[in-house]
Each structure stands twice: as C-alpha cells, then as structure tokens.
Image 1 (cartoon, rainbow, N blue to C red):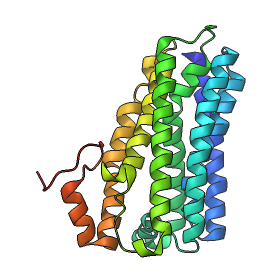
Image 2 (cartoon, one colour; image 1 turned 45 degrees about the vertical axis):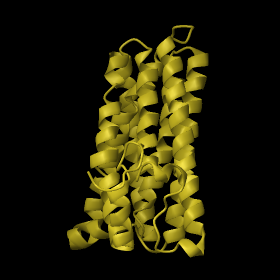
Image 3 (spheres, rainbow, N blue to C red; image 1 turned 90 degrees about the vertical axis):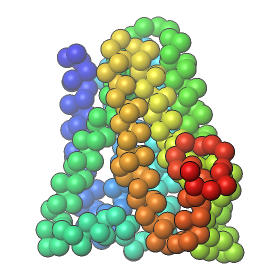
Length: 265
C-alpha cells in the first residue's frame, strides 16, 4: 500500500501544479475551456511518471503507457480542435459558472480546476496499480482489459469522426446527426468513453490489489450518463435543435447502443 500511496501523492502534486498553470492561461485567454484539453492530456505524463517511479515489468509498463497515451492525447487533440473553433466564445458550461459566480468567478474557477486535478488523480489509480506489478507475464484479465480498451477507443474515435463529418456539411445545419453509431445511441462517444475505462479497470484487475482500481467503472458510468456527460449534451442539443432533437429522443437510446424504436416507450 505504501508504494501505491507514494505514486498517487506524486501524481497529485503534478496535477495540482498543472491546474494552477492552466488556470493562469485561462485568465490570459479568457477561456476556461482549455481545462478540458489539459485534463485529458494530463493522464499521459502522470502514467509516465508512475511507470518511471515504480518497479514494474517493462513490457506491462510499455503496454500501459501506450494505452493511456493513445487514449489521452487523442481525446485532448479532439477537444483542442473544438475549443479552438469556438474561441473566443467560451464553452456554455463555464460561461454559466462565471455568470453564477459573478465577481468571485476567477478564484472559484481555480478551486474548480483543482477539483478536476483531484478527479483525475482518482482515475489514475488503475495505472499506478498496474505500474507496480513486477510479474513478468500478462495475466488473462490484462489481455481482456486491453481488448475492451481497444474496442472503446475504436468506437469513440469513430463516433467523433462521424459527428465531425456531419457537422462539416453546411446542409446539415440545425439537423441532428443520426449517421453510423449515432443511429443506435444519442451519445455513442460517451458510451465508448465509459468502455475505455472498463478496459482500464479490467487491466488493473490483473495485478495484485487490482480491485482498488475497479471504482473507475461505476464512477465513469455515473459521470458520463448522469454527471457532466449526457445531461449537459442533451440540454445543449434541445436548445440548439429543438423539435428535431425531441423526435430523435423518441426513437433512439440515450446511452447504450441498441435498435431504434418507432415511438417512446
């Protein structure tokens, strides 16, 4: 337990300092949306630090780092494109927070950023557990976890590409994307993000004490389905697309992909 705590403390220190820097940049650019980009990208250096500080098996370390880096930097790049396209307009979530907080918005935003650092730390527990495992072989659960992770990554990146292609066509302005994976789920990107974290949790389960990292599976399900994922996206889509989105809600599953229905159940 002591090595795990030591790794997590190192991760917390890095994340806390990073969020101070990101907060300062958000003040300079008048856009708090960059925290989403930084949050996603931060998992790569934290995982690298865990691998470097721990005494794990190099092959497992390499696979772990490849998984985290591929997911983390792909997501960060995707979010960066979105934030850049919207700048100088700020994401509606952060604009609403500023309006609600008023004159105290800047210091409270720093606290919010630090809360994001803590949330990221909680999610890195599976990485630390796997990095500490010196066993010179991959367990079946690690192979299964890597496969689930890969399926999630393919699904999420596919959903993002399909939505970007749909939005890029001027003829689709004001319409609802129902192409590809969006035909079977209103939020396939969030569903497959959760699948990725299922993969991380299963991968850690192949190491001693891996059960300590299983919390990421229910936690990310809650975040995606009931926290900052689906509810905000639904509200935004209803504001921007109105009746077209209401019709989409009547026929398409909200989270888990599945067959469409003729009417609401």
